[in-house]
Structure formats: structure tokens, C-alpha cells
Image (cartoon, rainbow, N blue to C red; front, side):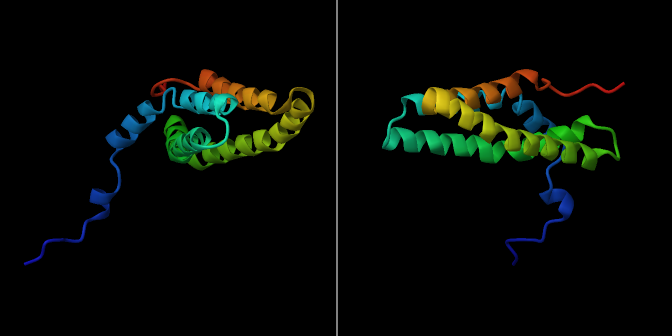
Length: 137
């Protein structure tokens, strides 16, 4: 007697409804990231810093597939690859400019200024990102 069976791809892949629920869950998901980054201002060394870094990593690691799914869902059929490319190109552009700005901030306001700058970037991204499922005409 078999206790397992081979599942078909339709059974293992998430359904469209599950993906849409995860996209709706993403609304406001960058707000905790900004809060955990601000936690570096109060977290000294030790357990508080360790917990703060772990919580930040959990949000940062888990949110990227949801953001990519939302970008693909928001575009027209056939241009999903372009939307993901623009998403990663924008991230690379910010990733190239932000360290230079953070270094300049560090020379003027030390590490606290850099933490506030990174939290402000996360909060800005949360404010300008669209909410809910985009409507198509």
C-alpha cells in the first residue's frame, strides 16, 4: 500500500488566488523593514541587536518573491520579463548610489545618520508603492 503519490505540477504550484493573497499581504510590508532598521539606533551589542538583525533578515528574505510576483501581475501579458528587469535595474541603480550617499552621511552625522537614511529609503518605498491589486482598463 502506498502512502504517497507523485503530485502533478498543478498540485504543487501555487494557485492564482494564493498569489493574489500574498500580493495583498505585501501592502505595507516595507513598514516593518523601516522599523527594524530604526531598531539599530537603540540596539547595542548583544541579544537585542541579534534579534533585530534576524527579524530584518526574515522580512527582507521573504518579501522579494512577493514583490516580483506583484510586478509581474501588474503588467500586461507578454511583458512580465521586462517588468522584472526594470525592477532589478531600479534596485541596482539605488544599490549603486545609496552607498555613496550613506558614506557622505556617515562623515557628517555618523552611523545614526546612516540608519535614519536607510529607514527613510524603506519608508519612501512603502509610501510610493501602489496598494492592492492594480486595475487594468
